[in-house]
Length: 330
Ligand code: NDP
Image 1 (cartoon, rainbow, N blue to C red):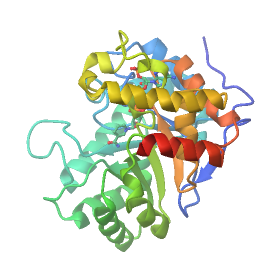
Image 2 (tube, rainbow, N blue to C red):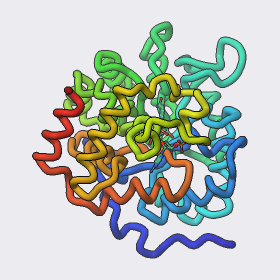
Image 3 (cartoon, helix red, strand yellow):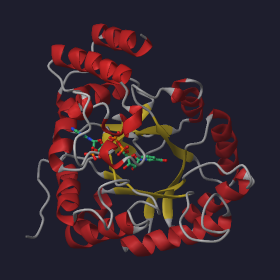
């Protein structure tokens, strides 16, 4: 059936300015790393993306290698765009990245100009787009001069193939150097995409300060720690079909009794406040205004809807934050 977006899609979502740029992003965005590849169920993926858009999520995050197989998430997204979302293209911020292993040989990964610009062309082709909104260097490359990597991002912007440039997985020092290079090519650094959750707080140790000083936004990936900060693993078992059951990026061996205890303590705090654990995790990230958007993953519309309940709830109170801190530091 032909898709028509909900009229009230901007009714509940809030939007935060991305650093000191003119671009606002929704407080939660949707990422297509898992669940949208050629090996995944297309119908569920489509329903999840349309559910997101109907909920005010107007930012979708991709990368050249998302699948499996690599590239297929962009193909899936391109199909949904063509059949359902094209009339809304101007309402949508689409990002893609290059940096990880994509094709054989010396030019299929890392940070050379050769790789980044050919990868962007291939991403545009797979998605059927003339431009993406944000193009990222997916990871730092210490063997390539940062000026070369940043000049490739800047040229993508100057050529109109990307509207903005971003970096991902760079540490505080690498970010400062990259931003300086990017500015020298006339492109302000829009955004940094970094892992961040209640279980992974590395960006508090310097990176957030750099981003604030530079006027660069921060979008936080794996905010639910790949599903750990949801109800999925609270009873200590590994549910069939869950990410941990596939033993890929989330290892079942990492789900230890100590971790289960911590997750249950966080879940108790969530329950006391009438929240779910996933909504607690989302609101915890949003407590810091420097975090522009929480970049969620979801394997179904129902998961997404549960996580979005956070946005109609009051922010975490000082008392809740203190209790959470006690659990995380305990
Ligand atoms: P999350 O931490 O949000 O994990 C999402 C996964 O958690 C879902 O696929 C699902 O897994 C599970 N889940 C989510 N909600 C629920 C729920 N309510 N109940 C039960 N289980 C739930 O994020 P991701 O790790 O998926 O990362 C999000 C995005 O961040 C990616 O798509 C990508 O865009 C970006 N990213 C960027 C990286 C980078 O290097 N720049 C690296 C990694 C991610 P399941 O159902 O399969 O168990």
